[in-house]
Length: 304
Ligand SMILES: Nc1ncnc2c1ncn2[C@@H]1O[C@H](COP(=O)(O)OP(=O)(O)OP(=O)(O)O)[C@@H](O)[C@H]1O
Ligand SMILES: [Mg+2]
View 1 (tube, rainbow, N blue to C red):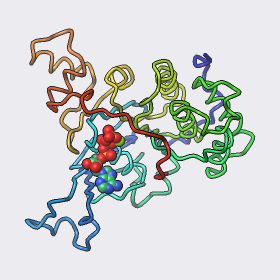
View 2: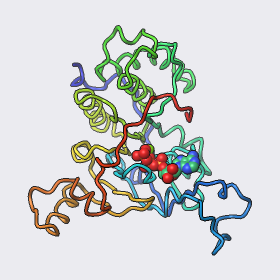
View 3: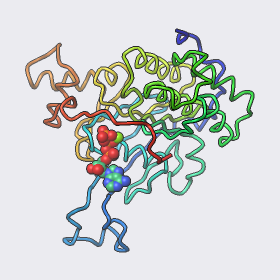
């Protein structure tokens, strides 16, 4: 494994002003349902608010500091991916305000897009092309010089534990976990300043999970990358994240460092010292993440 090498081949990220929060979310709202397409704005619905509508993100506010690894924990359908899509400008919020390094995701969408990259489990690829060809295609979209992009792509893929000969195989021959690594490599090609990872390790075997986690820590350490990630894996959240927000039905129910969350719940349930994040999650949501977790199928949805 080559993961311990420094990431010196990655180009330096552009440097936004010091002291500005990497991500500021103030009262973000997102509704789904055919009624949300109606011409009546949501603040005029009043008592006539459509019953069938889903409130996917319900007045979420949080701030992520530069260089922080921030985790979003929530059960299936709690709004994690929707929030990530709002930050990455793929969805338009129905209310509230989101800023990335001070730039508004709606008014300064192009600037925001240059500062972020999103990696999701449903990444779309050209399945007949190889990993390297897919990454080179992405590099062209990002206007990266071909030679530099090729070196960078190979370097990242090797560091994520993908063997050299795999780089030239059609993607359709790869397992879901391997394809996920290619998706992660694509997200890192541009050395984003804010990296949005939607379940980056779901479906990976323990060793691959570890490869990805170490790479994420390396990105932060060596490139000051800020990471906003969602996960169902409590150990991952505990190991990687400086702070965690637990969300339930679109709302934040707890937000703190893993240690503080465990301490607070530990003293409530009389389990000081051995409290786990699973206990914390249960205490705040009344749910167990394991109960409802169903790994997503396939990697070929078309939202990218
Ligand atoms: N495009 C859409 N159209 C309608 N409803 C949607 C859409 N996307 C998400 N939703 C709904 O919004 C809610 C939040 O979904 P979201 O995908 O954000 O959850 P999640 O926390 O990412 O779940 P998971 O852990 O399963 O990935 C769910 O009720 C979902 O059904
Ligand atoms: Mg999701």
